[in-house]
Amino acid sequence: MHLRKPCFGPYNRPHDFMDPLSKLFGSSARVKLLRLFLFNEDQWYTLSEAAFRAKVSKDAAKKELANLFLAEVLRKKTVKGSGMIYASNPRFTHYDPLKAFLRTATGVTDAAIGTTLRKAGTLRLIALSGIFTGVPESKVDMLIVGDRLDEKVLTTLVRALEAELGRELRYACFSTEDFRYRIGVYDRLVRDVFDYPHRTILDKIGL
Image (cartoon, rainbow, N blue to C red; front, side):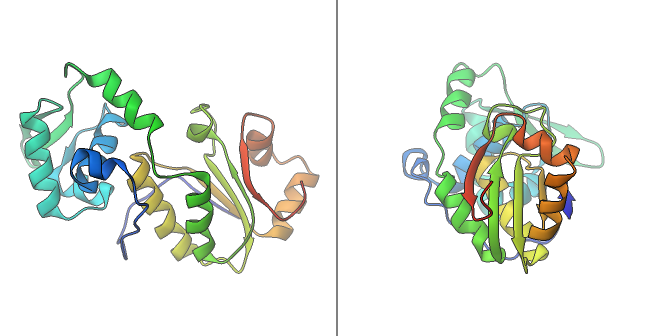
């Protein structure tokens, strides 16, 4: 069993989800940064942190942060020891409509999630809960069951999804055997997914 509250480390390679908003907004970097800041509105990020979290280059982040600040979507301040840091600006005239639009318009479809996660190994079940179903208090956003899964690859793939969604994802990963056992003993973590609103986008177990 693997349960993760997102941590951040080296990122290996980019993943393109073909987000149509990148054409509308001018670049995928701008869309990723908008999602990062608007969906984490209480967080302040340095240039390096924003680039890492959004999985864009520092040069692209620097350009887009400057543009978003000029557009008054972002605010910034200087902090001793950290330099310039940025956060979303809730006083932006179209803040709420823009946030709502970005929340509903995404290239990260259920099919895209399934296709992406299959790169980690043999998947048997994927269930989405938490932020995917409007229940943010859920302990898990994504429950993954599979065999011969490469956890390092899986972590990288989840980070790619986080960059596209602009949010951290909490996920649990089990082997098929472990998952069947936990279902049988009414494991609290598993029940936290299936007893509340969820979407099963892959089921080769036959729940």
